[in-house]
Image (cartoon, rainbow, N blue to C red; front, side, top):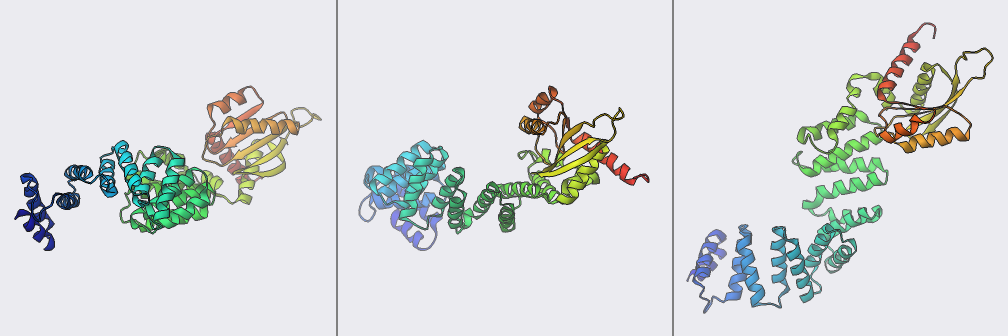
Length: 396
């Protein structure tokens, strides 16, 4: 009677009342007539799942595994529930068993592939995910994790193709857009990366979602790379408002606070390349040097200069090779070594690096024993001020 009443409640779309009756049947443990044990356990397990009573559902599916050991779906449900409890070791075993019983079980391959991906087993994960797609070409989760595998293997084109297919899944859309954006970043295609991150931000209902925090942080990095520093700072400020401890966002904001307060630093960082070259030449003049040759470098320029005046009449003016960078990262010893090699090639005995950031400890250590000076942001600020004063001087 309780079983039939529960069935009636199900027909009437009253699952909570049906579950109450089914629990009574389960407690009685009498399965006769119309109430057969195996169909009953499937039905009550589904109800437990519906009401998020996962421990009870797991007990039912384990009983079903014992009752019908040849049914792949029972093993899959057990694996699903173990994964829900973060017992991925057990989940993996049950997903594998469900595949043994049904070699075309696409969702089991997909879930197994996800576990293997998280276990850092890329080859096994890829095989499982490709099988999932083979048996169900609409398996968006499999496309998503296959895309992540390809991205980590630096196959960005392949990753983008898979992410595009995964984007059809509304639940995955934000994650997919962020992943696509980071693919384009890795390809140095900042225009497309910006477009993907902005799509993610527009699609989000909640600006505090983890995916949006990442999207804004990476969007800031893209704007930084394309020298749109104010837009970068705007996005990092929004990240900081939600998560002050997120990655290095506090450091980034501190690094670019001059954009709000120092127009000279702002011009140095944001100027077009021709204007940047002019500013660099003004800096060299502020050092009492004459510019002899100028060439562009990635995120900077190189200037060969000589002393404007020699202490001794008729003495040869000493040349100096100068590299000026406008980058957010620390200058490491490899950049100082590169300058030293360039000096030797053109027989210049003195060198100088000026940066809008600072230098690593190893960079300072290398320069200490060579005729190379290192000027960080503070010294740059002084030189920019000197250059501006000299521009304003009537004698100039």
